[in-house]
Image 1 (cartoon, one colour):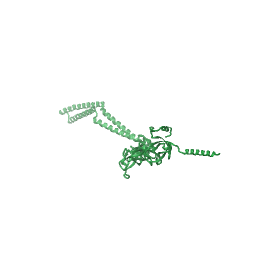
Image 2: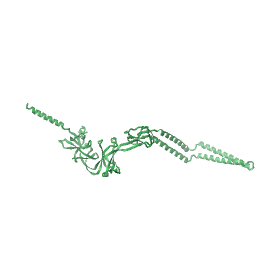
Image 3: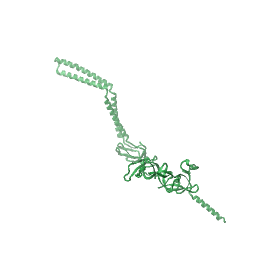
Image 4: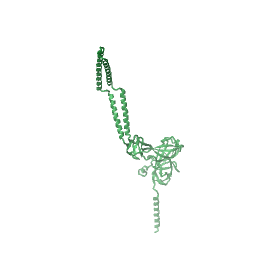
Length: 430
């Protein structure tokens, strides 16, 4: 009976120790990296707005009645895909008329280029011979009347009529010979040239009407989204009337206004980074262009940073934070961008602090960020120094001070200590 209190005391101590061990949070294997110091320009955080790479109000080039509107708002269209179609009946009739006129002119040109038909030449040659015979007839008759008149056997009227008929026969022979020469020589080069110009002019008319007909199908001028429809089926639209609004988002432009005190450091090609708070997504790149005219009221200069957007996640009008240079290069603390964790409006690092044995403590530290360059991001936070280790993988699992086990320093396989790759392959580290 005397041993029972001791036994119960031992059991109580064992239960309490077990409970204490169970209450401790589990140790999380993590990948860590060192805080380094690099020469990076001083940066400024600016409010930016996402703009489309290209925006356009697509207009009708010809007037017509809207028969079909194929595109819906928000629909993505490839260049050349049909947005809407206009009634093309009148354009088709005008084109048919012009083509018929062109055929007629081409036939006339072909006739001139081939010259006079052989049958026509023979016909005109026969007319020359006929006119020659008539002339000879009246030449004989004129001489006969003249002889009679000399013997007072003919009057003045007969002699006058014979003379006039002879002169008329001469002219008819001249006309017949000229017509025959024209037929033999064929059309003049000037006539053929004029006919060719007439054909060319009508060909241009046909091409213009063909173009007008093709413009009854209004197509997307570039790859992009239909942002707004500006007409509907059944409406009459004039030439130049708005059909829809389109935006191209393959690459977006983040536009921000830089104070004049910092614009000297924001040249095209200067490093810059952008953070999209709504998507918790960052991008590092460079300033694409600087608008060399200030906004008079604010004395700020617009700059643009191009951001690739192949997945169309970034939309025109979205909010962004732009980090741009505002001073000369200097020593800045840099960490891999994966080390920064966003929690609501707060951005924080998990800094490794001493623990017990091989276990370390990952302590959250709120930081402000700056430029992002080559996969690293500038940070500023209390107590962070060069050489500190920060968690770069598995940090999304940490909430508050947590015991961790660093199993890898750096991010390349060459820097992994023994067992780190096996831990990663086993799924310990995501």
